[in-house]
Length: 256
Image (tube, rainbow, N blue to C red; front, top):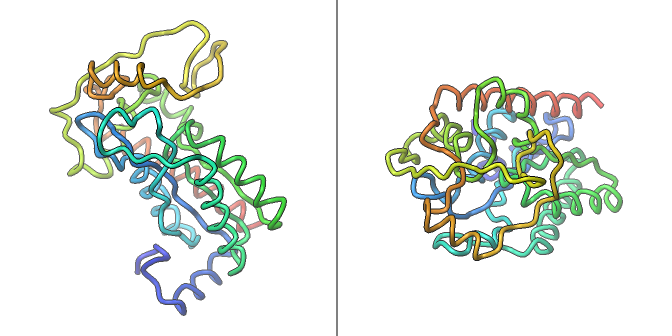
């Protein structure tokens, strides 16, 4: 039987909630351009596949994904849908409030949209914890894979780069068109990086201007990084590492 909440009757949902030990997983991503070779739903697909496997292993309730994210800097290319962060925060708060009402008071938000979604998710989590008396954790693959990306020899975090492409090749091979990928190597910019594994001094992230995004779009179809180096084997190892970490988070909450 599917672990996805939307596939269940209310009786089946009640049983799943009882078996979950109060833990729910909410995958959150975005719909935005991912260059020529990846689908616009990449960020959400990533959150979904991690959440699905962890739910199967732990019995946590898995909600329908929140497909949309904050993506103003990607509006230069068609297919991108952006939602204001305050709207996303309120939407996610209402989802959490509904889950808490049904006895799911330990919530894990999976962030498939990397650094861009983090701020509004933090604000939402703080509000939910203070007003609803629940526990909210934010699981971000970019932060939960620092060790494994180094071991696998991946290049730096960018957009539609080697890491994302490898993961998608492992989990959704039919949606990847590697033959269309155009590399756009990431240059080392003093005092600035969006890569969580970056070890030097850096400014905090601010979404790119439309002018900068247009430049990337013209050069590589919106990619920053080197997707041509991607492969499914390393993508699966990366995926397994993330699932293992998420399972640990779920079990810690179930046992608390």
